[in-house]
Length: 336
Image (cartoon, rainbow, N blue to C red; front, side, top):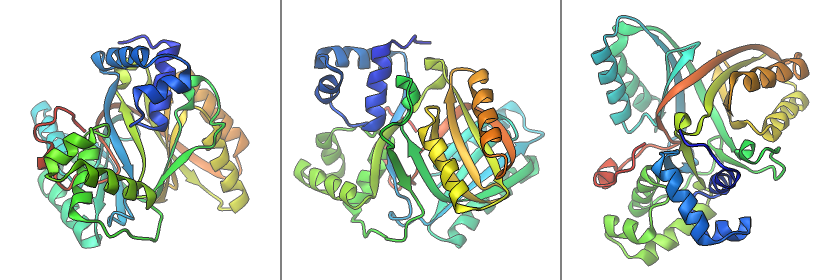
């Protein structure tokens, strides 16, 4: 495990705001030199602090309006069968999220699909092969995924109020094949150089620059972010489920504002089903989580009906978009 210095945390915070930020840009913001930033970044990479960089994509605009999450419990799996199952989950390009957890469920997977029939085909395939091991399967339907800044890295509230949205939009973007290939590569490695991307796809770097700018301008790509290797940096990730018993807009807005400002809440996911909200919370220890949830229960006792906590002990895969062209990344050492 690496012990993060204050400078490491500030660099990680700047990369959370813009995962493609250059060492020069980060150095200018932090008042240091590009060489220092490059050295600290190389040290973070050596210890595997970041699992991988990826593009936070508005899946609705990219033509995937259906995003389901499944919380599952298993029984009767041998160790070999379990690893085989998770390998199948990871290999399926329409399963962008695979998390193993302790608590309410053993794992959470997400299925992204172009329509209900596409979703049902994927789900049926999973149940045909592993259904006899699944003792609980609870579904939530994603209606909007909001990503906040990791302001806990700099020990302050999200004063800038920065957030990025995926899903919950109505406007669709007509994407070219090149743009879709770019999205796949940016899921595999969000910091991939445009020159390398151009070489893989077989176009000029100028085309990649132009298309990337267009993807950002149209809100298809809303941010380049990263997934921590939590063990390596001494953090814990909790995905917490909430049942909301009233839907008064003022109180829901107040809850959102609370989550936006809290430094440890990094993802705010609106869902439908048995649960109405999922939060991803990054903390250094359980006491911080207990304190946060206690404050939420007290401040929002009129709308929070039930809470279930899942400690994520392994993130096998985490993005917001199907990797439609996985073969493009076959020679890339980055993993999802």
